[in-house]
Length: 130
Image 1 (cartoon, rainbow, N blue to C red):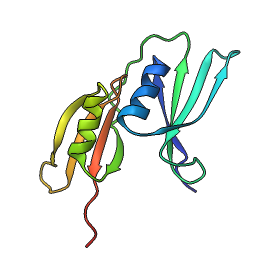
Image 2 (tube, rainbow, N blue to C red; image 1 turned 90 degrees about the horizontal axis):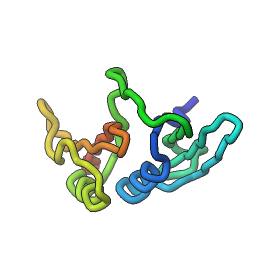
Image 3 (cartoon, rainbow, N blue to C red; image 1 turned 135 degrees about the vertical axis):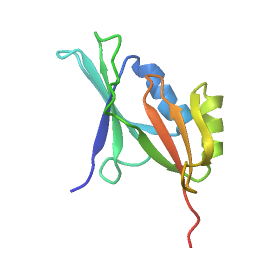
């Protein structure tokens, strides 16, 4: 078994795709419209679906707003340099909600950004090999 994908509902698919491609460096792996159901699914990630977990962005054509709720936390992305990843997000017009720095009560360097729909994304800086 493996984790295949995580689904996030988005209100503007093109805006979300720009963020995940430009700010986070992901690639659109596949995109399918379902006119009968009035929705579009777009899968984005860093590698092929058969090899890595990806994100499924679900765009329901007739929905203009979602409540994020309090149960969802964040999607974590491992990066070489959390500060550089934040700079890329800012350059792409994104929002950094917690700049890169050591986590509270620890030494792991983390940062948080938000996607256009307000979903939290954590940058987790890769530690050097021992």
